[in-house]
Image (cartoon, rainbow, N blue to C red; front, top):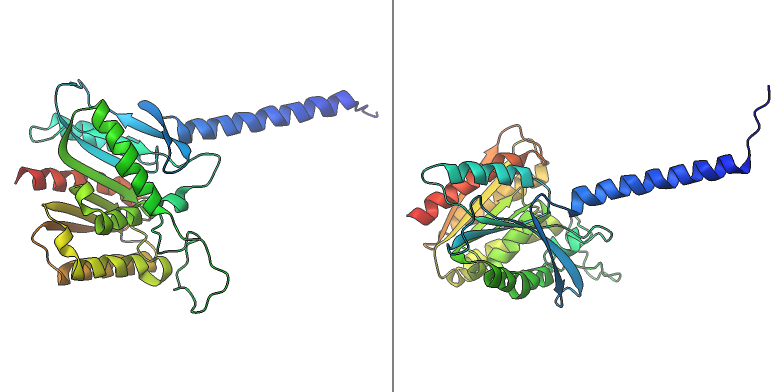
Amino acid sequence: MAIKITKYYFINLSLAVVIFAIGILAIRYYNHYVSAYTDVTLNSSVLNESRKVFIRLPANYNPKRAYPLIIKTDGNFNLDTWDKALTKQAKSEKGDKAILVSIPNLFFTDTRNRDLVPPYARQDVNTQARPEGETLIDRNGEADKFLAFIETELLPYLSAKYKLSNNRVLSGFSAGGSFVLYTLHTKPELFNGYFAFSPAAWYDDMTVVNNVEAFLTTQANKIKSPTYLYLSVGGAEHPLMLKAFDNLESALTANPNNNLVWQSAINEGAEHSDNPTLSVSKALAGFSKFIKK
């Protein structure tokens, strides 16, 4: 028996496919660009675009009290871990409540590498150094602009909106970790806590490591007040990541600084995506101990 297929069948089928695709896109958008906290959109003249931030206030937030500030990259990624760690810390006798601000990447435009890769490394990340006499110049990262957005637009907005203490942390994972290191060696005064989880310091033949080392060797006097740095990596991560981590440790060991307290940890058996989940509580505990000295 022949089955008659009409044009309405194809129209309905096409509509069903479109509706399904829109539904999937909506779910992805919600998971990426909507948080469980307070979502605020800032119109950035520095970046020439609107940027959303997720703001998690402590339980029983008191607007008259000054709170430490934590800014992290990558929006909703690992945000649940941060929420649990901060809740646990606040319940402990020695724990400090904090305001957490997470910056998501744009949704419809891929801005992660643009924002987080330092301006001395290629945006389209590469393991090798740039060839000499390169004729087709790859675009570099624009972490300098993203940092300017944080310094001149986001921080003033937060300072005007909330009462903040002098304790401020910048945290990032992978490319975000390289952004944390870039901030440390270019604007160390902006934060007194830096958390770099699995930092992608291997870009362009270890150029991030080299810039950090050069800073520690020749410009470490720019760290004018006590500053805390926490580095971590998963023991099962890519050999390049482990090599970069080892090189960072060597540079820090070879160039001690009275104003820079640093700790590092290798989470044995952890893959790249596992490491930040295992690192948040340890970094918070280290920073809490640091600011209480």
